[in-house]
Image (tube, rainbow, N blue to C red; front, side):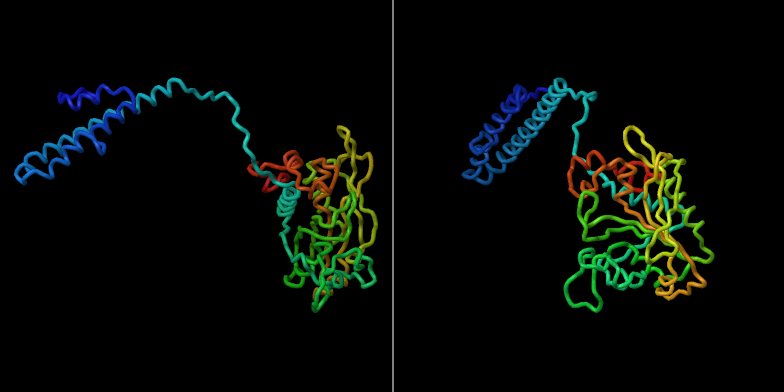
Length: 354
């Protein structure tokens, strides 16, 4: 600020701090200030006097206001320079850890499975979690005397319904609904929540399941084995996956097979891959002709295979969890340890949400 010739304005040049400048402003422009008093003196004057003195007083007020604003800007700039000279940000210090969300292992594995089977030509199909007993049992060749229909094994819904309603015990009803609504060929996976009246150290009343279905002409067990082998090798990211199809029984498939994979001990825990022993991971088989016929298709023309496995169990086998109940406890410490970052680059085995 260049010191002005007017001694009245020169007073502001000597202000060294903002509080001192503010005191000067109040003394000049406040309610009891010098210029304010001069403005009040215009009232008793004659029009001729007011025409002479008025412009002088207003010009002085504008000059004082401008001088104060200029000096204030200089003082504020000097204050900022002083702060910048004394305050330093150490860029080498670690940043503060901020809370962040993560992908639940179940969601992660769901994404991985969807990505893997999409590469094999499978679509993702969904259906209601509250089902009628025809879609959940009857259409799947499960007779009324089957244990799964017992009240202690299935959650039945109270109330008046055209058919008994249940919380679905598997995602197989999605297969039925798709076969009834779509024309073959069909290739789908049906992931989702399922419910069974079962709770102990290795079971929970609600868990996650994924099932696969292929309906086409000329489908054989060979197609099933190749699909499962390709899927498991890709999911577990190992080429030493060995499969064993063990004869079994399911009402909705014939023939049926439990699928075992070889396992080995690595770093003190049992992992999928190798040949030290066998571990059952899923059930499978050729779709029963009665199921195909129940959906309005000719079993002499169309054949298919189906398979199903627990998503939670696949997550445990791949990522090393040892307690199924922890999946549903909502413990943030567990999630921080086993959760997945939402911004990781997706891969075929890593899923779209990895």
